[in-house]
Length: 311
Image (cartoon, rainbow, N blue to C red; front, side, top):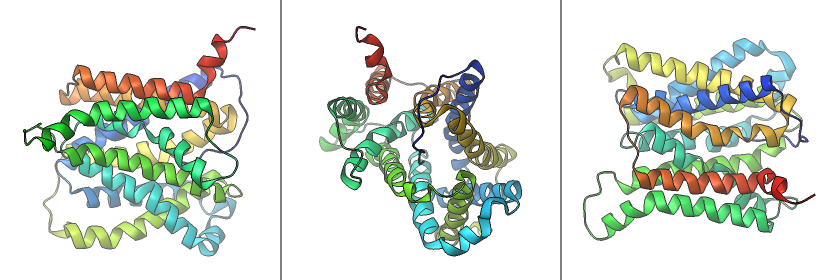
């Protein structure tokens, strides 16, 4: 997810409410994915998500803001963006969620800003690491190690840990992919954000169609239950298409820095939904890892530290 370079804006109550709504919606994406992936193979689920979301955004835009000329002129760039911002991370998250719950997947994926900062330091000239960024990244990576470490040690010493290590690693790799997309997405600054969203989702659909057809042969699969179908529709239309529209609306009014706070709201939303509707439970070590990641994100954001400084 790319962020525009906009200044900080005082958040009104309405903007805070919209930001919390977006946090719940994106937290819901992990919940809906967990429901659906137990009945629909991951690659087919990715295809359904991006295809339905792309269709919804095309209907919403109706060709406005130069959508079709942009698709024709920049289809190669949209393919790259669709690959690293949708196809790869969605597939990794859904594969992982075969074995892990919505809350844990959301916590692991919350490391996205950490990877964004690290990648931007390498890929850009104007976003180099500072002391605060280094400290924030170290805290975030420490949280990741706390979450993954016990399973890694269990695998190393041949003891069953209950969750495959790869299922925990995949959401983190998805976060790395999102970090790559944040740097690559800067080349779309001259396009309307909704055009960028529609373009990359359209490209993702093109990419995922042959992959899902070859890997899953979805036409041979049994019809999923109504709960899974409802989860797929919610994942595509609410947590993807509408979430993009809401995200860019908030960013236009509140600025990128304020909008990035949604990262802190997604894991609690996913944890609560998983607890209420799926009976998921997290262990103390999971909350410890989440606390470290949240602390790292707060340090990266910087506002807490600035408020503590004496006038």
